[in-house]
Amino acid sequence: MDLDFDRKHIWHPYSSLIDPPPVYPIERADGVRIYLEDGRGLVDGMSSWWSALHGYNVPELNAAMQAQMEKMSHVMFGGLTHGPAIDLCRKLVEITPEPLQRVFLADSGSVSVEVAIKMALQYWQSRGRPQKNRLLALRNGYHGDTFGAMATCDPVTGMHHLFASQLTQHLFAPAPQPKYDEPCSDEDIAELQQLIEKNHAQLAAVILEPIVQGAGGMRFYSPQYLQRVRALCDEHQLLLIADEIATGFGRSGKLFACEHAGISPDILTLGKALTGGTMTLAATLCTDKVAEGICRGEAGVFMHGPTFMGNPLACAAANASIDLLLAGPWQQRVSAIEGQLQRELAPLRQSSAVADVRALGAIGVVEMREPVNMMQVQEALIARGVWLRPFGKLVYAMPPYVISEEDLGQLTGAMVEVLGDL
Ligand SMILES: *Cc1c(COP(=O)(O)O)cnc(C)c1O
Image (tube, rainbow, N blue to C red; front, side, top):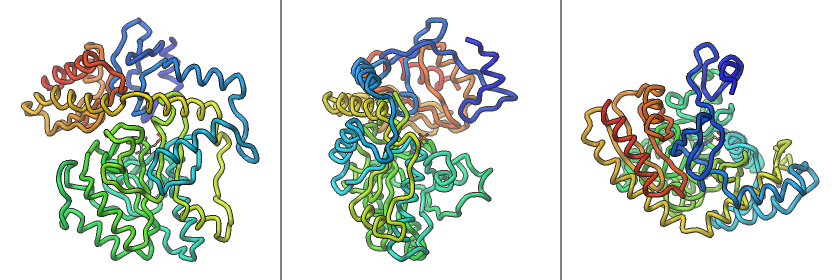
């Protein structure tokens, strides 16, 4: 592979073209392994950013996509419809919390967040309350890289402070403090409550990642906190947007993280694992109330419609991925992964360089006291045959659910060796 060309001409995520970080040439991927050009296989601990639940080169997904390709890879969604989209939207309505009945198919996670924000704003405009046009978001939150989504990311950890002057100024509550297994006290919710009580007349919605804050900190928080946010939204007429782009499809141990708290949002975003890591596709679901509110308003329609909306190939992949997931013992697999991550990462608690070790569902996190040298740690992990992508102080594993006990052992073993030495 022409890595020189890559270095000179191609942007990678959050990368420099003056001093490009190393990128490793990948030839193919199969099962839980991605294969370097030189033939070495790496146990994948990232699921390609939360997406490849079933691993790679999955026969069921390949077959579904091949069959769809022979009918049509794409056809516009304006004025036309097709089976793969209908099947997918029916599945999504069925498996998400009951009040979510209406589906908008988008092309990436960030776009589904833009769509969610537009839905909330259009809803209040339609209801004759256009001054409800701000959002309340959480510190340490991450919702994507496009402008609307960026404005809801943590202004500091969200990587977007450079654009601050161009972003809508939303309100931010502190990151949730009570941990996953802790109750949520009045004090824990006090600041968010005050923000809502003071500003509800200009707030359209609260937007948050339920239970697991992903890219903005890999933090797990109390289901009671989420219940209290839901109650405050109801009390003060705010919509609740749950961003399950990272947590959706079982990653946190429940099919959707909202289930930990037994709540339903008014608007839900899904992405990442939707197609089992094969194609880019996302979805924004909303309740009848939100959809009808929007469509009874001045515009009469929802104002969004991407070119590749409802891409049949992506929908076919999503249908196959959801079927495969639900047909298998995913809950047992995820809970076995959680237990193994907890047991095998626990020794790192003894290391003075480690601030915290935590696991929930198929997510294991080692939080260091200082930011790690990503390239150095990555290289040491690759030498031990595993692929992880540390970020700041966080070194985390979220492997495909199909990973064997032995392969996961290799992953955690490499983390313990490499991080224990820092
Ligand atoms: C990844 C992510 C997004 C953005 O999705 P993209 O597909 O990268 O645009 C939004 N919200 C959350 C919670 C995410 O993890």
